[in-house]
Amino acid sequence: MPGFEIIGKEEKRAVNKVFSEGGVLFAHGFEALRKNFHIRQFEKIFCKRFNCRHSLAVSSGTASIKIALKAMGVKPGDEVITQAFNFIATVEAIVDVGAIPIIANVDDSLNMSVEDTEKLITSKTKVILPVHMLGVPAEMNSLMQLAKNKKIKVLEDNCESVGAKYNGKFLGTIGHAGALSFDFGKVITTGEGGMIITNDYKIDKYCREYHDHGHENNPKLPRGKDTRKIYGFNYRMTELQGAIGKVQLNKLNFIIKENKKRYNALLKGLNNKFLLRKIPKGSNIIYDTLILIVKNKNLRNKIVNHLKSKGFGTKNLPDAIEWHCSAYWNHILSKKQVSRSKKTKEKLETAIAIPVWLKKSLNDYLQLGKSLKNI
Image (cartoon, rainbow, N blue to C red; front, side, top):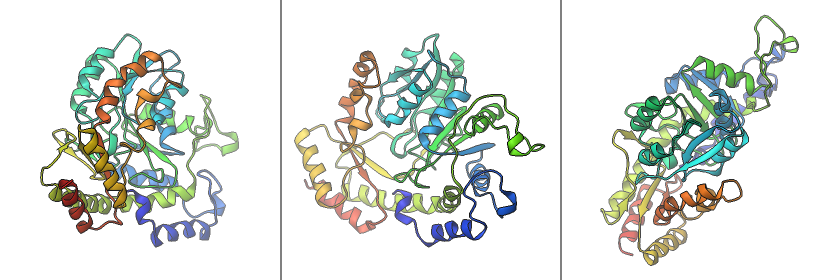
């Protein structure tokens, strides 16, 4: 269930409050005209909620990946290993910093295969970038041990699984940094927007400066006289987004709780009829998507058509596979990396991702499961 389904009077009040307090929409300065810094408040409560030392709100999830890669020292010619099942933004961010995307295949969890990743590490590998797809963690213990052994940093792309945990830790806080998204289809939303979370002061410092044209925001100086050591770009979030983000974050537990009810109702209806995506041991998922593995093409097509006819649809698989599998990206990847992705493509072509919607009741999901079982 994405956060847009429960946007309501609380978000409207938060936006109106920004205007009643002076209407300052910019994250910095204008102290005489405003009563609050909503983005900074959003970051503070995000740190408390996710038990991390630093969080930085930015303009998008894509920006959060790019900024974090730069903060980790990724430079042109470096290699970054990511997975074949992701959203194209992950690869775009790698390319945009001048690095070379190296594609690992996925395992039965549909997340990064640790075994395949290990084979791809070279002297040029700078970062391993697992993507926690559709609410489920990658095998982070093994990935972190591999990275430690090879002295490589790990950036978690957690744009699609905000609120999920692995062995008691929130995704995004296990690696050296985490990149999150709040676009309109994500579990919580600010329309657009993202967050970089980390426990590393140096990573946070670089990110904070880079996303704001290099501003150090020196407290001893006015912004117009501010000090700078690096160049940057503009990847700032707006105060309206920060205000909405605070409200949506307060709804996250409710969203996951309601997701779980519908997810379990669907499972009950299916009654073990289908093979499911593997969930790694120690995972606390966000229950926003249930993935069936259906190898028979005719049956798979019947299920997809049935989901459409009942108003549920599918989520990424198969409806948007071309934007979520690197086997299709010959416009951005080398032939070698596209070819390597075909193994994942074959695996994803057997998958059907059923979205969990708040607008559908528990009984809707129970009856859907029963009807799918009888196809």
